[in-house]
Each structure stands twice: as structure tokens, then as C-alpha cells.
Image (cartoon, rainbow, N blue to C red; front, side):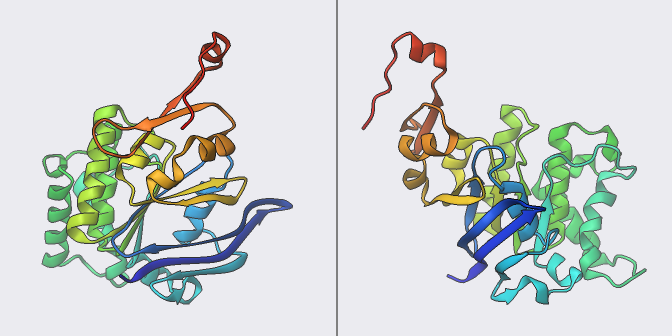
Amino acid sequence: MNTSLAVKDLSHCYGKRSVLSSISFSVQEGEFFIIIGPNGSGKTTLVKTISGAIRPQKGQLEIFGRPIRSYSGKALARNVAVVPQMPPADVPFTVAEVVLMGRSPHLNLLEIEKRRDLELAQRAMSFTNVEHLAGRRFDQLSAGERQRAFIARAICQQPRIIVLDEPTAPLDLAHQVHVMDLLERLRSEEKITIIMVSHDLNLAGFYADRLLLLKDGGVVSLGKPDEVLTFQTLEQAYGCVLLVDENPVKKVPRVTLVPNSILQAGFKPKRT
């Protein structure tokens, strides 16, 4: 299996404040890789660095064996697509026009989209189930519809990696599952590498091939869900009491927060 992303001793500071400290890991081609961790752990800065929005200050970051600095903006966009946490609501274009913007890295300046580009946009909208919204203005969509349309735009870009920053955060439960199932289909059917940030430990554990747990800009744990989602590791990272047992639907860890009021009432989590 080929390596999509290799991060070696990556560090980054904002002024004197260190937000990433000597982080190293790799992501394999076609892997569903999810980054978790408490607020302020460096997740968003890491994602911005992977996507090329921030230049690495120290360390190395390679995309398919090449240093990220060796890519032009267009060349990087042909390999890596980015889906933000909350796509802007005030976009004055139709869904079809937004999705077609994904073809920009493949077109020359002022070049008009060709039939092939239109076909790819149509296919992307069909894949994400927004085809019926093609003529709707983007600012008339719900949060879930906007998120799916932005994923369609990323697919239309024909990247080898899609990077997502908390794509399920603004969504209800049904839309969360829809988006995660959609990403899983991209990984399994299109062989696209998925790298995403999530605050939802149970969604992360259910869908991820591997997890990266960050705290204070450093790596706490890296591995399969059952290796990372242990009460010892999570309590170290989050600083609260958690119960970890087996998900009844799939043999992966299930994480339950234990409120202080329950602990004060005498509840003692089972430790195995």
C-alpha cells in the first residue's frame, strides 16, 4: 500500500505559543484516518498544514512522496481537496455552479468547462444525492445539504485525498450518519484517502481505520480504534472520567461521558 501523507517532526507556533510539537505519522492510500483530541490540541492547525493553507515552520510534510512545498497551488489542489466545517451560507451561486468550481484546478485561466467537466459535476452530485438540488441557490440550502454539496465539489475536483475539518459538527444525527456513510463510500469505492477531524469519539471509532489522538500539540496515541479509545488514554487526554465498553452494533469501543454528579452519587466506572 502506498503512502498518501507522511508527516515528520512537524512543529508550528503562533508567536511564542507552540500549537504543534514534533508530530510524526503517515496515512496510507485509501485509508479513513480521523484526528481527535480536546479543544486547543492542534487539530485544526494540523489540518490546515496538510491542506497547504499553512506552511510548515519545522519538519517535513510529504504528499505522495513529494514535499508539499514542491507543489504549485494548482498541482496541490489536483491531489488534495478540502471541505470546511461550515461551508459559507451566503454563496450567490447554484449548487451545480458550486460543484463545478471543483474543476478549477484542472482548467487554465479563463478556460470554459468542457463536456467532460460537466459530466464529472453531474456524477459528483449524483454520488452525494444533491442532484435534485442542482438548480437551487446555495444560500437556500440547509446545513446538511450545503455540506453534501461541498463534498460533491471536492469529488468533482478528482483529488486523491479529501481533508475535512469536523464535517459533522453542525449536523443532526441523521445527517451525521449520511455524511459519514458517504465518506466511507468514497474510501471504499473511489479509493480516496479520507483525513478528517472529529470531536465525536463514537463516530470516529465506528468509521476510522486508524485514529490520531492529540493533546497540547503532541501525539498521545496513534493506532486502531481499540488501541486509542481506552479509558486510560482518553482520560489522560481529556481530563474527565469516561466509560469505555463495546459498541453493540460493531466490535469497536463505545465511549460514554460520566458526569460529576453521577460520580458524586457514588457511581464507580468498571475498570478492565
